[in-house]
Image (cartoon, rainbow over all chains, first blue to last red; front, side, top):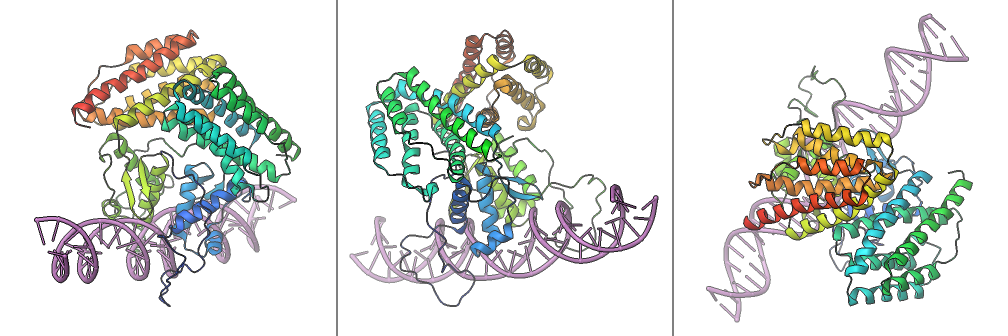
Length: 251
Length: 251
DNA sequence: ACTTATCATTTTATCGATAAAAGCTTGACC
DNA sequence: GGTCAAGCTTTTATCGATAAAATGATAAGT
């Protein structure tokens, strides 16, 4: 695995996690395994909030505010922000702090473009080199996606969101390059941020099950050209719908 | 620009940069502009050293050692390491610190593969959409590359290394996607690390001017297929030479 | 001799405090 | 009224210190 951890860790900050206060030993029974670092937890939490739009794009990040909110000192917050900036979710400027990365229709178009180009390369490689196990994984991922209900209350952490990501990952998983896969994942995240922001802005485009099925079918039939066409159209469609939505919202 | 700063800042840590010690005010005359943060400087220095192989792959990073070496506290070193981990130059594991990312023939093959696929996509887009200004920039970058002497004493920071990077960037610059460009850059860095390690291990493959010229010619003639073929062959050749070298060195 | 438990050492993650910057406010001056 | 400088406030970058965790060494038990 190449990129920094991008999986989503839903654990919240443990309330009783004190430090430097020798009041009394905390033997939290529920703490089965070694607890994650504060940095990791804050990173995961902020990542969720940026992806889902809870932290508005382009807003300045007040470090002290976050420290108070999580009840921690500067270091872990800064470190979490640094990790976020490696995923392009926040921007850092020396001596001027952090802000949430802005969103724009221009960037959305750019991301979609890159997605089409890179996913095409990966998908063709996958179809060319993927074995039977890869094919089965695609079918399985599609089945799970179909079966997973959409939970629109907290879309950022819903099971469907996860299943959706895994379906798309499975398509490319046979391409044989970890770097390429990591980049596709990265692009997926970038696009996902726009999708989730669109959702919270009231967007509600119908389910894409039909599209996913068609893509899967073309893939397991090894029809590379058709699969690529369908996949790119899938991306472009999302882009178009978001464009309408965000343009109306005055983005 | 999407990725975190990847340009190389050769400035060394200013010796007189003291903090918290009110011995006497330092009015360093040479300090024209606001000096960079310690973090940025350390980041740039370590980045150089990892890329050039001065810090051996897979070696554990001793934070305290770095603190003493740079004469700074933990925070800036940790932050620099975090930034490095976003470029995959170091790996972090919770509670187990940082280590320099390992290298392997497997990864080299993976990187080369991804480079071929992604550069192909970007190059085709560049050739298809690039305008006259892009074309001119390619010619210019090639001219500068030819004219720049190779300085093998400190290859990691040499002018040639920079010109080489810029030539390759110029080829893709017309592709119209900042994200795609950033990723190609990222891959270039990854490959560059292997090249520089190979150099310091005694590798000495002849200059690639002829290859670069052929690529440039195909590009400005808008012969996409040929340009792609030459470019990928250029990557593969480097890989093959490194493979021989590293296999012999017992990598 | 070979594990395994116990203790000492090193390293990491985190804290709270502080100097230097940057940003903001106010008031003199044109 | 608009510009600009001096002073105040907020924020950032950095420090040095400390608890928890991991690592390494030592000793007991098989």
